[in-house]
Length: 74
Picture 1: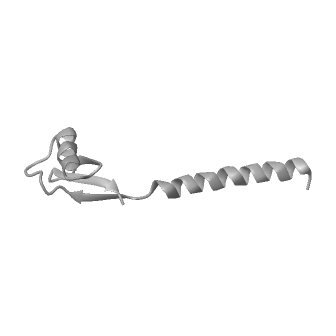
Picture 2 (picture 1 turned 120 degrees about the vertical axis):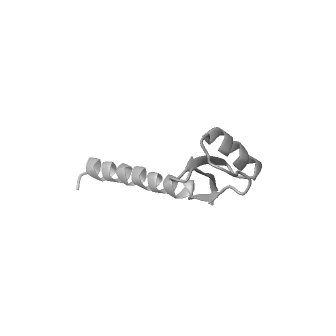
Picture 3 (picture 1 turned 180 degrees about the vertical axis):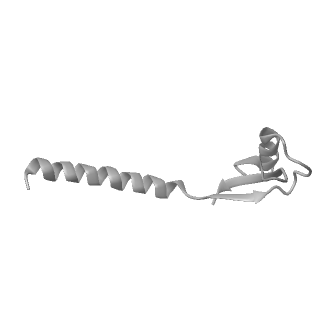
Protein backbone atom coordinates (compact mmCIF):
# COMPACT_ATOMS: atom_id res chain seq x y z
CA UNK A 1 0.00 0.00 0.00
CA UNK A 2 1.01 3.55 -0.45
CA UNK A 3 2.13 5.68 2.47
CA UNK A 4 -0.82 8.05 2.02
CA UNK A 5 -3.30 5.19 2.25
CA UNK A 6 -1.62 3.78 5.35
CA UNK A 7 -1.56 7.22 6.94
CA UNK A 8 -5.26 7.74 6.19
CA UNK A 9 -6.19 4.34 7.64
CA UNK A 10 -4.13 5.05 10.77
CA UNK A 11 -5.86 8.42 11.33
CA UNK A 12 -9.25 6.81 10.75
CA UNK A 13 -8.40 4.13 13.31
CA UNK A 14 -7.39 6.78 15.86
CA UNK A 15 -10.66 8.69 15.37
CA UNK A 16 -12.76 5.56 15.80
CA UNK A 17 -10.79 4.45 18.85
CA UNK A 18 -11.22 7.86 20.48
CA UNK A 19 -14.98 7.77 19.89
CA UNK A 20 -15.28 4.34 21.52
CA UNK A 21 -13.22 5.50 24.50
CA UNK A 22 -15.46 8.55 25.03
CA UNK A 23 -18.65 6.48 24.86
CA UNK A 24 -17.26 4.02 27.39
CA UNK A 25 -16.36 6.83 29.78
CA UNK A 26 -19.88 8.30 29.75
CA UNK A 27 -21.23 5.43 31.78
CA UNK A 28 -24.76 4.33 32.37
CA UNK A 29 -27.63 6.27 33.87
CA UNK A 30 -29.45 4.67 36.78
CA UNK A 31 -33.11 5.58 37.21
CA UNK A 32 -35.23 4.97 40.31
CA UNK A 33 -38.55 6.13 41.72
CA UNK A 34 -38.25 9.11 44.08
CA UNK A 35 -38.64 8.27 47.77
CA UNK A 36 -39.75 11.76 48.80
CA UNK A 37 -41.99 12.87 45.92
CA UNK A 38 -45.54 11.62 46.43
CA UNK A 39 -48.56 12.02 44.18
CA UNK A 40 -48.81 12.58 40.46
CA UNK A 41 -45.80 14.21 38.81
CA UNK A 42 -46.48 16.94 36.24
CA UNK A 43 -43.44 19.22 36.65
CA UNK A 44 -39.96 17.97 35.74
CA UNK A 45 -38.39 20.92 37.57
CA UNK A 46 -40.12 20.14 40.86
CA UNK A 47 -39.30 16.45 40.50
CA UNK A 48 -35.64 17.30 39.82
CA UNK A 49 -35.50 19.48 42.96
CA UNK A 50 -36.80 16.61 45.10
CA UNK A 51 -34.30 14.23 43.52
CA UNK A 52 -31.37 16.59 44.02
CA UNK A 53 -32.38 16.81 47.68
CA UNK A 54 -32.10 13.01 47.80
CA UNK A 55 -28.57 13.14 46.39
CA UNK A 56 -29.40 12.35 42.75
CA UNK A 57 -28.15 14.29 39.71
CA UNK A 58 -31.54 14.95 38.13
CA UNK A 59 -35.14 13.82 37.92
CA UNK A 60 -38.11 13.81 35.57
CA UNK A 61 -41.76 12.78 35.42
CA UNK A 62 -42.40 9.60 33.51
CA UNK A 63 -44.72 6.77 32.78
CA UNK A 64 -48.46 6.65 32.33
CA UNK A 65 -48.95 6.99 36.08
CA UNK A 66 -46.91 10.26 36.22
CA UNK A 67 -44.23 9.07 38.65
CA UNK A 68 -41.18 11.14 39.62
CA UNK A 69 -38.03 9.24 38.63
CA UNK A 70 -34.58 10.24 39.89
CA UNK A 71 -31.44 9.72 37.80
CA UNK A 72 -27.70 9.53 38.46
CA UNK A 73 -24.58 8.07 36.87
CA UNK A 74 -24.09 4.45 37.94
